[in-house]
Length: 221
Image (cartoon, rainbow, N blue to C red; front, side):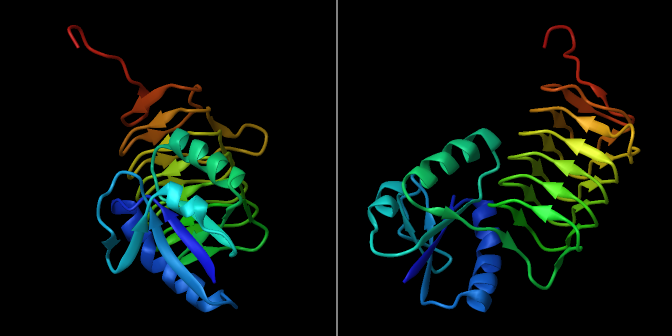
């Protein structure tokens, strides 16, 4: 029996559970079991789904084991991914079959989560373990790195490059770049909720507002 594990039984994990049931139920050719894996929850069952620890998951033998990581912190996602792969589990991707769209010519790497009402348009390249929360889109000719997170309602227009571990907050808008001068969101950068990004963002920086500007702490903060 194949086992599909959602790593993280918090709010986001519970949100993607129906998507996993839909996708696995439609495409799996073998008997399967869907579980949560979470080391921080004492419950044995959540929303009708069994919860086990990561140690218990690793000790399961004699079956194909697949995982996806429903945890927002991108650095934690990377650590868990490496640990799961080293234990013999394989990543799988999650998407809403009926309410998310990926156009032809786009490539999305392993471990992604595309929530309902998300759209990936043409000739987009997306790295590993990408999260796109509800009502987000990625327009044409964008390049997105590994472990990038989109909160709900992100609007990423065409010719944008987003580097590894960047976080784009709820309702943020990234202006369209050009083929010769894409807008670049640097590695580990954070774009705040509702920000309107009109120019490139330096690696590791935090930008907020309209137009988005680097966040500066006030006196006494």
